[in-house]
Image (cartoon, rainbow, N blue to C red; front, side, top):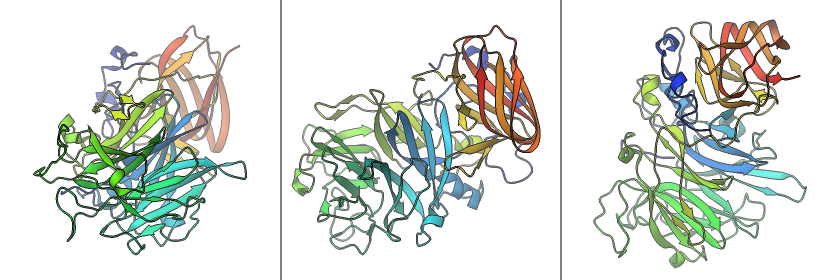
Length: 503
């Protein structure tokens, strides 16, 4: 968490490039923090990941072939202070859950209500997640997070989308933890599990205090976790990170620990690392070690990601997460690219992703890039298996409601404005003959091909206050790859899932 002082993008792009005025959203009526116009809807861009919620400070992990991403819920702050307010992070008490298997269409799994789980907490920011198969044969998930700047909390689950529990009922690391030394803000956790199944936790921030210097603030820390991953099992050791600020993260490759962090805003007046460029202001840098509890073993390598402002996306704080998925490395980061579309300039952030070139053998990260285009879709969507309505590439006028099933959401349309969901890269390996959807409400769900006012592939009506499944026969010769637009019409139509069939 940061505090600042202060199959391709070309897929049907031409078909999506015109006529967006009729789909602009109204901002009148009840409080509405949805975009007036989605920056993704007609552009074909993959960034930001979600256009309906502000999310920051990414972490991620792969589980059963899906990539799960978690982050800080900046929208909770926006809802509290309004569009003219500032993102001071104080009203954020929840974390956001997303997942994907194609890197372009993202499933929104809702929020982790940290305040309800841990009423002792102040605020919840900047999660870091790891998982491990435990003695019961189940995969357990450990989600560490910043309790404001006061310390690190932890939540656990046997599912990547919950339900979550607080196993400690207190902070794992706090300002009163013995051995912190001159670390005023033991927050922004970064966790990793090594090849031996041992957990490690980095954290720290708060500035140089009375004993540090601008060059070496002395506030970055690492500790070995206990076998249960919710206790500490070593002394707390300083990582001597030049110009350290926050955003601590850990990776582990072939016996090497990689520590990444956000540098501060101070001038680089001191730089003793010959042959290595000074890090730019508020960029991301990395260090490596083979013996992480030896404070002198950590070696500064380089910086690998500039500040979002250096990429033309507005200067802001910085936080990244490096993730290998399906053979490629992806760098998750945040910027403020969405806030102008929501009529605010209060510092509300959005998650984005780009590929990053990595040399695992030599533990080298090349300089990353930040683009709105983002990444390409790595696999098509199969319309002949059940798809959740909360899986979207872009949205207009849609909000989401949780169900009784953890991680499952309903996509809800609006009576006051156009409500549309876009799903990209859907591959019809044959002609669809039937469309089936599960929904509640009173209205019609239309499925349009390739643009929101394109050919109607299917139209299904609902008239029930509870979820019902309705089928509609289709007569079409359309197959191949298409973008689908689900247009909601009627009174608060709530859609759970959809599927096509072929005979």
